[in-house]
Picture 1 (cartoon, rainbow, N blue to C red):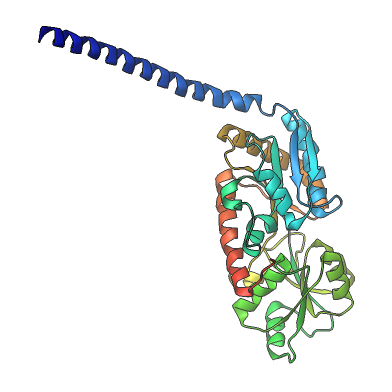
Picture 2 (cartoon, rainbow, N blue to C red):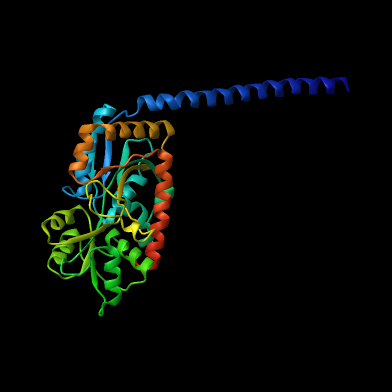
Length: 338
């Protein structure tokens, strides 16, 4: 019995020592993590940053990239390289981002169509934009105008809806393609008002605007490319799809006539999921500094875009709400791509 007690006592002493060692190791691990996180933020970026752009050079998204990349590079103290990855409505750039290491050295200049619309259009995407991407910082928003042929006897959205309700055959409206925001914006108006319109999709903004100006369709939601034609009198603008905007002081918001009918295109920075919080905060901080710079804001506005500033939490919540909204619109319009 005495020997057994000694053995148990010795074993207990060893177990206490082992437990103490484990506690020390655990404490050291968490202390190391606590030290490593700020250190990672201080060392970031350690090399040039790739900014993936889902469009070819020369478009509106690429133009924005050419504005923000040099300024972010200046603020980060590292080169920000614009990497154009066009194809599959932005899905190629999204997949490249998802597969990248989540360390902040690969960022996506994401447009809303690829983040919150494409997932509802493509059935077999190899990623989930809500799960596999981290919304980092909102960048800009833009406006879409509801425009009609000047020959139509309508001056505001309510007159347009009533005219369309009586039209037989139905009025035709154009878009830049199935599932585009131009398409879904009109489907939103149709769903709220119960009017019947004939959708005529074109292969891109250029062909759609040429057809609109040529009188092939009666109405269309257009982006900044429609503004010059409105000013020249070739088209008549009835309302903004989003909120009122100082750039269009005479145009009301569509939601003023039909509450809930509101759509504002946007672009933001996203990263692979798992981005460390200190790195996310550094990117957000420098992005906010960039958007607060008067010269940068002026350059952004010169390409018909508006700075769009939020916190990471607000941006993440906004992305989720946009995802839900467009999912419902795609369901109502019964649109599929593949």
